[in-house]
Length: 145
Image (cartoon, rainbow, N blue to C red; front, side):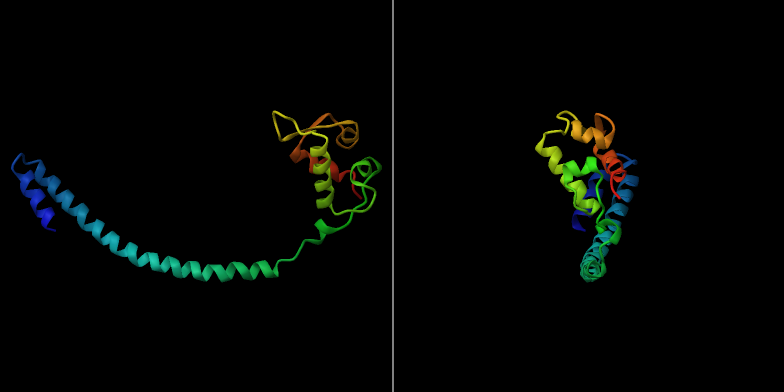
């Protein structure tokens, strides 16, 4: 407060325009102090809210069950069986085994990592020489029953 009184006294002497500026400066300082006080009150409130949220997040995680459609074992076609094996597998495992095959044979495009360059076996599945990793899941679906 003492520094605020000294600053207006110095600015009042040069010009009249400084007087309205003093009022603005004084007005700005007062709300800043008021804003600081609620901020301190808000910080503990956030901690309380965070404490409440932590147990809430744990409860849904325990209740969550695996979607049966993803875990259903599907039989691959002959072309797909050459890569992932003939045993029935869930869709997630088929994709994982395809990625193992792609990385092992270095079929991922060097420049654009999202693209997969098909070799002879993959061309039978994809139907073209290059597919994106996002297209791959859709193209695999045609070879699973």
